[in-house]
Image (cartoon, rainbow, N blue to C red; front, side):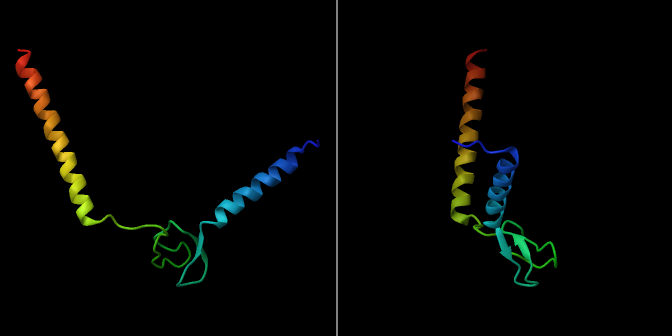
Amino acid sequence: MSKKTNEEKEAERKQKQQERLNKHIVTCPHCGKEALDHMTKCPHCGGELTPAGYKPMDEGKRKKIRLVTYSIGIAVAIAIAVVIIVLR
């Protein structure tokens, strides 16, 4: 069993890091240079980019989340008010 030197470990770490980075690189449709897939503007030309995997939330889902959140908030407020009134 051979032990890896610190230099070999560092080289492997850098290679893995570069491989992870390469998964997130896209080509700008405006200038053709590389940009990361989460960016909304190209860092080279300022052109508009669409982030990979980004989808705006459906408006119906947003309304349901808001309704549930408000309902829970009102229920908690009522429960606190009842506790305060009962403990007087």
